[in-house]
Image (cartoon, rainbow, N blue to C red):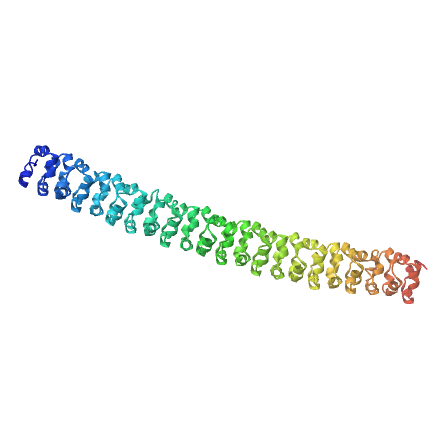
Length: 594
């Protein structure tokens, strides 16, 4: 059956009332020519039933004018379009749709649009897309969007995109996004971005990524960031990095971190760094680490280069744990400056290993405060080289604890200068072992102060070598306690010079001769002064040998007390020379035991 519209002119068609339009059948609409379609008024278009417009052919659809589309088609009619009708729309027709019409497209209609149709959408139309429509775009459609269209997308639409749609964005499209759009794009799905997309982000866009999304980045994504992008990260973004992300940073990325960024790193992230990452830090970055961050690097302290160690501030040095201090290598320890050494606390000094103690340079040794010297362990003291001991100042020597002094080796004792020996406290002198005493040179022995000599114990005095005894000055001899004098062995006593003998006080003479007067040499006997002679006990007089008796000078004999004369045995009396007898006083003669 032939449709009634077949013989109608375009003019006739345009004169049809809306009622007549609505009485046309679906077949009549299908029979309309393209020119007849174009001649329909916007009111006639609006009056057409939805079902009638849903059967238009490709040619009929393409015959619709832009006015018919924009002003004639209703949202209901548009929604009734089949996929074939949607695909038939020309780019001009697409652009003719109003933003509200475009917003009324079904998701099915959006999904069948071709790339040329998608690219034809105006920025206003793109901006008007609903979240559901944006979500309906295929990945091919997404890639077809121009940068202007991408910029026009509403943040809500961006936020509603699926992960595969996000991954479909080209690098140019990514760069076209505003900072708000980037925040929306990455929100909750930053990990879906490809490394190429990551690398395409501008520094402003990088700054726009939320901290939660920063924390969600995968290792490869983090490593894809350029040095410029790394430097663009805000401090709160740096703080948001997980331990895994921090550990994934390339050394080139680590090196470009700003001081503020380094300070913003979480302590746990610092602790998670690898040795290569730690070694990548510049000296400025090292100094930028807060004291709590340095403390977190305790297990990585050995990874620091010598220049990095030297860059540590005194405040950073102070907070290093004792285990971190003990972990320093000798090469690291040797580069510490005097200020850094002085910044070490007593607990840190106590934690020094013998290797570290041995590694101290002479400058470092001299930089130690007296409090630090006191904190050195006995093992650390004993491990010092002789050159290190020689580097100690007199104040430092004076600060040595008695335990430390006792720990000095004989080689260390021998290496000490006379001024250092003099700096030892009397308490230090009193605890020296016999081998330490014997290790002193004669010069060191002579350098001892009278107080130090007086502090010698009887055991120490008895340990003095004959060379050391001979080296004692008359002032030092006078300072020796009577207990020490009494403790001297025979060979020590016999080595005393006449000057030393004459320097002895009467109490010392008594102590020297008590029970062993007969061991004195004749020279020593002759050296006794008239003041010293009365100090000889009568019992000791009786033990003198005839040679010793004969050694008394005629000047000494008259100064012997009558008690001492009375104590002489007959053998001793008979040993007196005629000159000695002639020097006896009348009182002394009365007490001779003839």
